[in-house]
Amino acid sequence: MPAHEGDPGRRAYDVVIVGGGHNGLVAAAYLARAGRSVLVLERLEHTGGAAVSTRPFTGVDARLSRYSYLVSLLPSKIVRDLGLDFRVQRRTISSYTPVERGGRATGLLVGGGEARTREAFARLTGGEREYEAWQRFYGMTGRLAERVFPTLTEPLPTREELRRRVDDDEAWRALFEEPVGVAVEERFTDDLVRGVVLTDALIGTFADAHDPSLRQNRCLLYHVIGGGTGAWDVPVGGMGALTDALADAARSAGAVLATGHEAVRIDTDGRGAEVTYRTADGEGVAAARHVLVNASPQALAALTGDAPPAPAEGAQLKVNMLLERLPRLRDTSVDPREAFAGTFHIAEGYAQLAIAHAQAAAGELPAAPPSEIYCHSLTDPTILGPDLVERGCQTLTLFGLHTPARLFAPDNDAVREDLLKATLAQLDAHLAEPLADCLATDADGRPCIEAKTPLDLERDLGLPGGNIFHRDLAWPYAQDGVGRWGVETPHANVLLCGAGAVRGGGVSGVPGHNAAMAVLEDLAG
Image 1 (cartoon, rainbow, N blue to C red):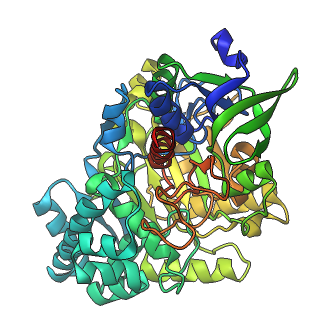
Image 2 (tube, rainbow, N blue to C red; image 1 turned 135 degrees about the vertical axis):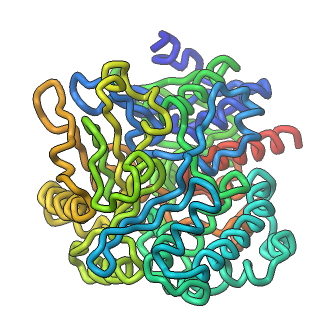
């Protein structure tokens, strides 16, 4: 770490940013490039927040995207504006979902070209209907994505303005007005196909397909609009490549990145502010005209002394693994290198998802935990050291659904172990060999596998209740009490630039961009 990153070096700045996650770094880079003096205070000894690459296994040269995995919502505008040395790689396969039907191991492979996908649908469902419905549904969401995604880095539209921009009554009804379960059941008949469509509405969101709150609709919306296409790509070099590039951009523009500096209080009169921070050596104070908080709404309230928002709750299991080889599949019609190249769905049939949600809502671990798996090293082998590549090692990252934080409260360690065992058993049911036989071992001879519950994420990263979005995702339009950019707070010169801002969530940089725009407008006006 450069010496200046351990010491702010001055007392007054134009902007102090609390939190050095990717959104805080985006804001810092924009503001510093605009000639503003910027201080970033980061509690941890490194920047990046949840968007980091680490080597979690002792003595193993595998640099994994430990918490955040894929990139979709990051606008290319931000990459261009900040001159980032960062790129993503498109996955060759969208998804593979194994299933047993009629006593036969089979599955649905989506990707590899239209003809091949059409054939896969016909083989699974016995006809053309489901594939044609799939094409119509994702054609509709694709058109919606082209119209909605560009608005994320503009001032918030009203609901009616966004509806006019979408200009598609069918899409508006399906995503903005009725529970997404209605759209899924209207369009698809096959249980497995229905489940694959629904999963994007449940990533990090504990909800049923027919939840009247429509939180599942908002989750689906953010998963289908990314980049104006809905594609989810692999960050080359791991997620840390993005936050390293952002830190370099902010630093080279003149921002001061102070790691090991924990903000503990914000005092503001609406025109000026002071941020008190704590280090290993004591406390300090930095003055600023504007303060941006790249943390959760709960953390913001604690810093300003305001009433905290309703508690947030995460609902996912995250598992990182390194394998000596990819496991063989019971479905011999598909190569494991293709099956694991996209999103590998486990126990995510439509009925299975409903049962798992109902069991978790009743306070029980799902008997058949649903999850999905990503193998980043198939798309980007640079995250592995040369020796691992030569040996044929591969990474696997598993994201489990419908496991709300409340289930882990009695005994986090014991429940984590039980859930991991049950989750891997669901995967093993579709493998021709146990996954455990494929796991690599670290320098101490231990299997290369780690699992994180919502309570672990709350402890490690400060995510409220382990919620990866900080709170329920918001509609991308203005509602009562929301300001021009969706980052405003009750304090005129304190802005929220984390995932809990309107249009936050995911690795997007959008709240950081929008908070920076709000500051620059205020300074100009």
